[in-house]
Amino acid sequence: MKTAFIARTALLSLLLSGYALADDDCREPVSDWQPRETLRQHVEQQYGWNVQRIKVDDGCYKIKGADRKGNAIEARYAPASLRLRTLHVNFGDDGDARDYLARPTSE
Image (cartoon, rainbow, N blue to C red):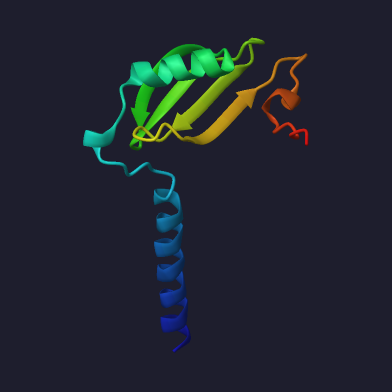
């Protein structure tokens, strides 16, 4: 009885951990994807990023490049909606995270 409980618990934890990892993938139909160049233009104009590479990773667009202050960035976007999914910034010695925090709106 105890062995069966341990086996079920182990199986359940494996299933749940696999589900959690799979949730990071983008699942939009390829027919709805926007061109990579559209994403490149958006982030260069909107954020001033210098895009070095855009590739497909787990169904998402993955950007590698640098922000306007030279900090290395890696971002993942949903390819159809171009919605930001994850952003990693490796700040240099004079890096400042305030550039990436939401600014309060004035009333």
